[in-house]
Amino acid sequence: MPEETNKLYVGNLSYTTSEEELKKIFMDNEIEITSVAIIKDKYTSRSKGFGFVEVKDAAELEKAITKLDGQEFNGRKMFVSQARQKRERF
Image (cartoon, rainbow, N blue to C red):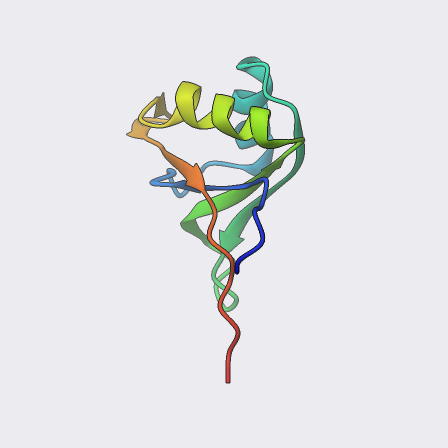
């Protein structure tokens, strides 16, 4: 059975969004975070338009989804949901 995680998937980000900007929108909404990572292409180092934010606990996770999912950010509507566990590769 997959382990529950306090990690959020944040999608539909502008390709110019920085980790600092992403961190700020969570902090501005009074959500306690522990880490932020925007995923980048390993060859070009350009943003792939999504990232992950780890929050303090399950209550912060629910608060983040409620407050931020669908919110306009840098000209786009963010998708915010609980991140799924990475599947093991063979």
